[in-house]
Length: 284
Image 1: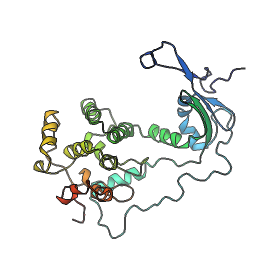
Image 2: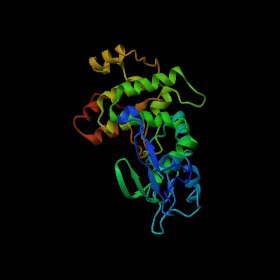
Image 3: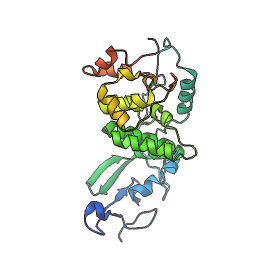
Image 4: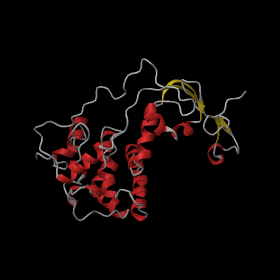
């Protein structure tokens, strides 16, 4: 008998979008086999992420999913992100850090699966990171656009970032973060990095200037002329005042690094941004 998805009971295939595949009705495999022997569509299993993360059991047969030799995926992480001698951040940032500490993503044991999809067969695919991410985003839906912003920042998609921020400001939903909050948001799924950390580490210079223009108090004359012309040409407004607690230059990641630290770690040519005092630390 042909196996079907234990959740929706449909065949273990996925129908492609005709605009993407060029063939109407083309199907590809979408077969995720759990250690217990149950089959699911990828998305169907992700829809059960909250239950799996909390119980570590198959949502169909209730079998325990992690292997016996698996260890905690979050072992060895440090609970301290800054030295005791470092000056405390502003009260507003302290509050933001406390809120995000309460929103840490779950850390679960590895769950090794076999997955057959359009790209081929993958053996020993650990799905626990994907489950933990989906469970976290389900519990904290406001983090979805923030995660999307970070993805766009890493890819250097300036126009995509502008469109996302403009859409949020034009159509705010209850519980959504503002543009300012989004730019300063620290990702619990990525070492508490903010958008500026992500852009710098991906060495996306246009994104770095965009984030600074929208989320920092850097003086206008500190920006290259080309950046100012591009920003003003795109109609990107600057906030009249940016409190230190919301200034993206001063947001720390899980290792206590501000943007200046990331630039210095990257070396040339990024350390030149520090030389003129563009990135300031709390101790400066």
